[in-house]
Length: 211
Image (cartoon, rainbow, N blue to C red; front, top):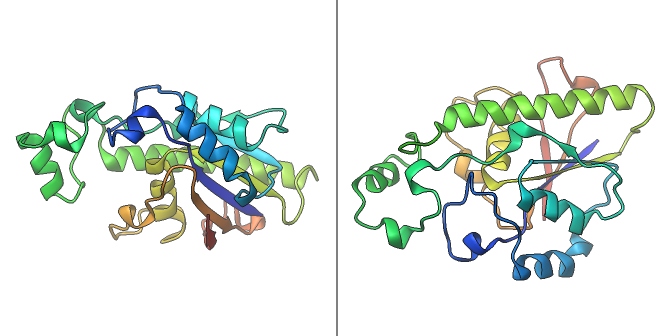
C-alpha cells in the first residue's frame, strides 16, 4: 500500500509562527486557498485517517471531499507545548525556560507540557492502530494492492511516525532524527508499506516522494 502523510493547512497561528498544539484552531482563509490550489499534488485516497483537531479535519474535507467517512484517531493529536502554547519565538525571546529548550535541541519536555518521547509513543500507538485497520480491510478485500491510505495530521505526528517507521521498525530508532522529517503546511511524504508485514515486527516505511 501507499501511505500519504500530509500536514494540515495553515492556521492563523501558523501564519504568525506560534506554537499551536492543544489550541483547536481552524484553518485560516490563506490555508484553505493554498490547499485548494495545490489539490493536484495529492494522491487519491481509498481511506483517510485524521487527528481529531479542527485544522486536520478541515484539511481532509478540502483535499478529499469525496471520502464518505474520516477515521478519527485520537492519538494523532498534536503535542502539548505547555507554557509555550500560543506564543512565538519573538514573544519567548529572553525566556529562560525557552532558551533551555532551544539549547537542548528540542529534546527536553515542554515546561508544563508534554514529553516528546511520550508524545512519540502516543503517535506510534495510534499509527499501529491504523495499520491494524488497513490489514483487516486488506484481508477482507476492501483494500487492494496499491490502495492508498491518507493521514491528515500534525507536523509533530508526522515526525514521530517517520522517525520510528522509516529509521526503524516501529520502535525507538536509537538516533535523534525527529526534526529531519519536518514539513510545511499542506505538504508531507508518500511512503510504501508491505501490508503483509504489519504486526510482524518489521513494519518499515519506505519514502517514495516528498509532496
